[in-house]
Image 1 (cartoon, rainbow, N blue to C red):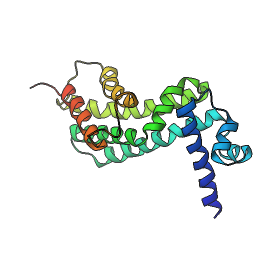
Image 2: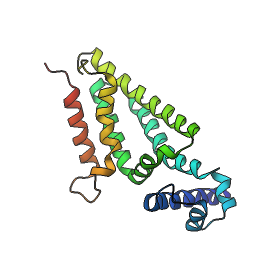
Image 3: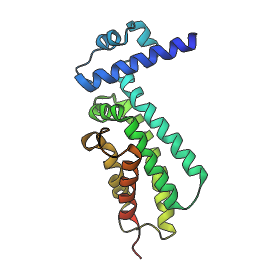
Length: 196
């Protein structure tokens, strides 16, 4: 019962914060508004989150952790670099669509995080990007992927589509999240494949 209550309070606070940050903006949302919308006390919120900053980080951290664990699973299975990269790209697109509200709020507000939190986000994203780059490098070494474009450009090419999902993706559109993920992945892989 205690564990269930714990989860409910943290989840309710997170849900309320996400909704308020997306409608009012991070800077225009107070802790008082969050606890009122969640139906909890400030004390209950502060039991799980040390600050509004901590709450914004937690919203994004869920998606980041999921994507990193999925990346680890996919790479652990092994296989040819192009197959692994395809699976990773489809996964990151699908999970980013699943967490579209979280990603939208985060990318709008990341610059408002404390310096320590920004460094932590940078560290976590760099860890993901380094693992992603290692897959591309494996494909370059085997002659599948082009090596005439800097790695930073190749990575930015794919992740710009991910980071700007909220600007162009609509859940009510004709394609499912999987179809969109596969289409974007196909375009990316075609663009980095070495011409024969």
